[in-house]
Amino acid sequence: MSVKLEVKVWRGGAEGKYQSFEVPRHPSQTVLDVVIHIQRSLDPTLAYRYACRVGMCGSCAMTVNGAPRWTCRTHVDRVCQKNELVVAPLRNLPVIRDLVTDMHEFFDKWARAKAQFQGERTRSDDFAQVAPASPMRQAADAAIECIGCGVCYAACDVVSWNRDYLGPAALNRAWTLVSDARDVAKLERLRAVAGDAGCHACHTHMSCTERCPKHLSPTASIAGLKREVARAVVKGEL
Amino acid sequence: MWIAQRVSAGVLALCVPVHLATIVYAVRGGLSAAEIYARIHGNHAWLAFYGVFVLAVAVHAPIGLRTIAIEWLGWRGRSRDVAAVLFAAALVWMGLRAALTVFL
Image (cartoon, rainbow over all chains, first blue to last red; front, side, top):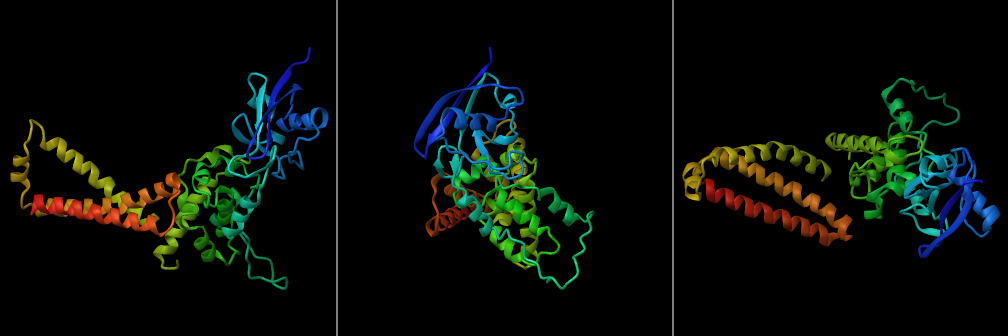
């Protein structure tokens, strides 16, 4: 006899309730497999979001048994001890419907953190030479693999207390650009990420670092921004 | 403000142990208010120490309370900043008044 998973899935928007489903449990089954099974075989009206299924696109993050996770790479075996699974939308973001959150606020904050590269070279210039072993390049490399899944944003308590806070992902991206030798908007960016809504609001709880599915440390990036802002203030640049 | 809070925290990290160690050392075997006053009255070195201590507290505490006001009460804007400055002024006034009374 096959083992069944008892799955509770959030239905509705900000107001709603959990709906229970029974899903057959399989070896190597991911949480996303479970959600797909529900939508394809049990209730086609279930709303959720995914694209790549291989941990690249960052679109399938949900709250699984109370913690934010990327569902496509989370095996049921890892999070489920008693054949019970609770799947909800990500915290700290408005719920559109069921498991789908509105990511506008999350990505708007990337723009507010000036998290776009600004170079000065044109296509007629030669390539910039950045030594792989240089400290700046290594600092950028350590933080660059973010897939924008929003898990860190959902894990962050400061985001839930201070709605203006830019959040770990936007600040992590800003740090990769502050550490980019080719970028020319460093001071403007440091100004954008300093203050009550920026890096100085971080309490170093490290929930983002604990939960990041790519094993990045936004906490370290935010600490780097604090150092760079302090350095710029001491030099009189900010 | 972040830098001011970190620097004042550094000052407090030195002042608080000195303050506590002095209390523990001084009260061994009991001590009355009159005895304390007699011993330290006119001591300008202690006046300077507690002057720095009071100013560090007056910088450090209001900045932290201002953050708590944002996160716990959702209190934003000018009124919150004015309240933090008033709190800092109150700390300076009460602290320096006490230090001047005791040590001068």
